[in-house]
Image (cartoon, rainbow, N blue to C red; front, side, top):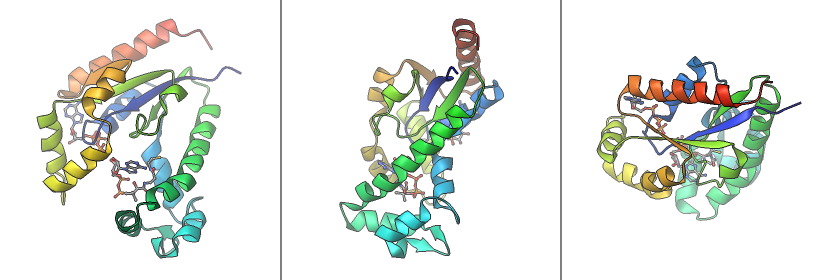
Length: 199
Ligand SMILES: CC(C)(COP(=O)(O)OP(=O)(O)OC[C@H]1O[C@@H](n2cnc3c(N)ncnc32)[C@H](O)[C@@H]1O)[C@@H](O)C(=O)NCCC(=O)NCCS
Ligand SMILES: Nc1ncnc2c1ncn2[C@@H]1O[C@H](COP(=O)(O)OP(=O)(O)OP(=O)(O)O)[C@@H](O)[C@H]1O
């Protein structure tokens, strides 16, 4: 059976990925969400809980992975993030493979915030980057409760810069005006629908 065409959706913090993902869904394209997959893994009964407990017992509270405890560990131990990734990434990859295998649509959208950082460009058929000017991004992120400028700068430093993401993208979708974004997404979906072979 033919696998669906894989649209990789990414963008830096606050650029509007979640909003764009909803627009793909509304255009009839099933969406898989990497962040949601991690949330499930960390929830009670999730496949990541026992594995994280083995490497960091303090990070499991009431049967779920406690993100604050993981963050505190990552802040104090330079090897911690690697150890967490070694557990989380294969489980996330499994979840994604099951989603792709379980769909009969011709295309799906994979919402992967760390697509470039995780070296996953080759695992999708096109890379779509959602992008807004830096001042718009900053204003959006700083308007979130509890977010400080220092935290924003620290998160940005962990991410591949927006300019590089845009340069490496197959398609860049602007995210300043909702209707403009929706138009771009609908046009892309229509173009792919025309070009892709029938199922
Ligand atoms: C570090 C954790 C506990 C922070 O959780 P929290 O809810 O506070 O924040 P959130 O998940 O939204 O991440 C915030 C930001 O941290 C950065 N970040 C998170 N994980 C990673 C990573 N593996 N590499 C680089 N940056 C990362 C991203 O820029 C992201 O925008 C959590 O992100 C985590 O467990 N990460 C490891 C698993 C992972 O790699 N997830 C990414 C998707 S596969
Ligand atoms: N196309 C758009 N036009 C105008 N505003 C937008 C657009 N997309 C998103 N926004 C606004 O920007 C903010 C961030 O959007 P969203 O939550 O979709 O970003 P995100 O990239 O998923 O964020 P993060 O990476 O931090 O999780 C929201 O307040 C949303 O209303």
